Image (cartoon, rainbow, N blue to C red; front, side, top):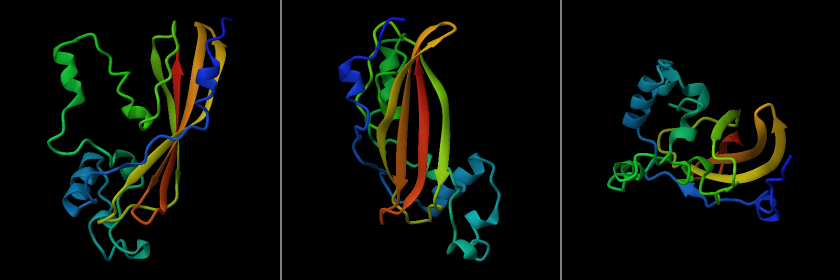
Length: 175
């Protein structure tokens, strides 16, 4: 098997991306729309009495993973498709939390290898969510269809008090 991992790529392990922060705090209307979109009708997401055991109204556990969207009025990165219909978006870096891209010549396909999450506490209305990603591991393996490079990225989601809400580990497979 040809070695695809260079010293430069290996040096990315442990590297941390920038701290990214949501453009605005979680508001009740945004929470309502999110719970409707994910079809979660638990009253803890809209009724303070029902959410009393959590200290009030709380968001669904995976809300922080979806809290960082582009701010209103900012450019849509997908507009690039108008001039380049073959563009696949892999150079955006948005899925890797601002981490430097891993470029592996000869392995053009990028696949989602799965996500696992560890929940610490639920986000509340008024929370400002931040996220910071880091490369946990980068390895190479031989698969049935040829060589693969496997990236493991851990993203930690916190609130304005730096309390950890969620830790998510994503696996990205390049082949």
